[in-house]
Length: 319
Length: 316
Image 1 (tube, rainbow over the protein chains, first blue to last red):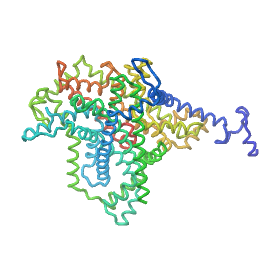
Image 2: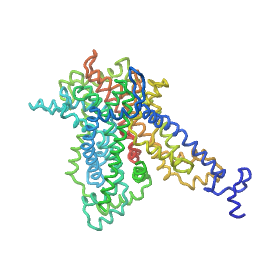
Image 3: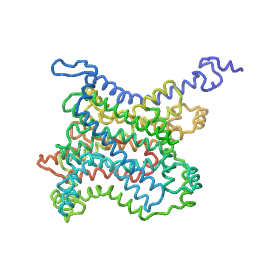
C-alpha cells in the first residue's frame, strides 16, 4: 500500500485499516470532533445565554430611550454622549480612579512584602501568620462592610470609645472627607491576604537554579528579592493588578452597605456601579443604565490594558 | 487584550496548578540546608502587629455577638461584658421574622452548592475538550470565552435581570443559580490543568482498547482532573456564597434571600432605627454565625486553595 492510497478519501464503511490521525476528516477524527462538541456544548450554551445574550441585549438597549411621551425611540449614541457629560457618572469614575491609584498600590505592595517575608522563611509561626492574614478573604464583603461600619461608628465603635476615654475626639471615619479612605481600608482588609497568597504561591514555584546563581554572585537577601524574585513573579503581579483594577471600578457592596449608616455622605451616584444600579432599578431607566455599564466596561478594559502595557514597557526598559 | 492576558496568565497558572513540584522540593532543600535562613524575632513581632489589624475586627465581631443590645453601647467593644448574651442573641437571630434567618442560611447553601458543582463540572468538560482536541472553531470559541473574563458584572446583571423578568424567572432560585453557572475563568483554569494532568498516551491507550471518546472522559480523564475541579468548585462556592449584587437585583421575597442580602436588609432596618426592634445585636450575631462555615471550610481545605488561588474568579 502506498502513501497515496492512504491519503485517498474513503468512505467510513470501506476503511479496513485505522486511518492516520490529523489527516483529513477520518472517521476517528470525526468521532473526536463530535466528542469535543458534546463536551463543550453545555458550557457554550450557558455562556451564550448568560453572557453573550445579555451583553448584546445591553448594547441594543443602550441605543434606545424610553419616554413617558412617545414610548421607546431609537436615539443612536445619545445615551453615550449624555453619560459623558453627566457629572454624576464622571464624578463616580473619577472617584474610582482615585481609589485605584491610591488603594491598589498600597494593597499590592503590602501583599508583595508579606509574601516575600513568608517566602524568605525569616519568621517564626509562619503558617499561623499566613492563615491569619488570609482569613478575612473568607468573610463576605457585605459582612466585612457591615462590621467595619460598626467599628468606624461613633456610637459603639472601639475607636470612638477609646478616644472618648482619653478625652479626645476619634477620627470621623464616616465623614465626607474620610469616607473614601475608610472604604479603601475595608477593601484592603479583605483582599491583602488573597493577593498575598497568589504572590506567595508564585514565589514558591520559582526554579531553584535562579537562586543558586544569585548565591554564587553573593547577592544578599534583599537584593535577591528585588532583582530575582520580583521579576520572576511578574506575571502573577500583573494578574493581581488587573483583577484589582477590574474590582475597583466595579465597587458596589461596601459603599452600598455603608450608605445605610452614612446616607448623607454616600449618594446614589457614589460609584459608577451604584449609579447604574439606581438608574436601572430606582429611576427605571434601563436604557441609560445599559450605556453607563457599557462605558464602564470600556474604561475597565482600557485601564487593565494600560496596566499590562506599562509593565511591558518597564520590562523592555530594564533590559 | 485577551491574548496578552492569556499568555501572562498561563505562565502563572502553570506554575500554580503544577502539583508535582520537584523544583520546589529541591528549592526547599536548598533554602533550609545550605542557606539556613536566620529567623528574625523583630520581623516576627512586626508581623504579629500586622496580624492584629487583620484579626481585631473578627475578634470584635465575636465579642460583640456575646453582648445584649444595651451592652453594645455601654461596654468597651474589644472586651466581653459581665453578662453573656450569646445564647439569647442566637435564639433571637433564629426566631426573628418567623425564623427567616434559617431560610437565608439554607438558600445560601443551596445557591452556592448547586452553582459551584454545576459550574465546576461544565468548566471541567469544556476545559478538557479545549485542551485535548483540535476541532474546527475550537480556538475561536476559546478566545471568545477568554475575552469574557474582563466583562464587568454590572454590564451583564442589569440586562440579565430584564431578560429574566420577561421569562418570569426573576424572584426564583434560578435567577441566582443560572447566571452563576457560566465561569469563563474556570474553563481557562481547567484547560491549563487538563493540558498538564491528563497524559496523551493514556488517552491513546484507552482508544486502542476501543473506548469511546466520552467514555474516556468520564472513566479515565475525570479522575485525573478531580483536584483541579475541586479548586474551581471551591472558588465558585465562595463567590456565590459571598455574592450580593446578583441576588439583590433578582430577588424580592425575603424568604428567597441568601444570607448576604438578608443581613444587609436587617442592617438597614437597624440603622434606620425605624422598626420596632432596632436590634444591632441580631445583625452582629447573625453576621458572626454566617462567617463560621466558610472560615472552617477555608481552614480545612487549605490544600486546595493554596495550590489554586490563581483563579481570582472570586473577586467582586
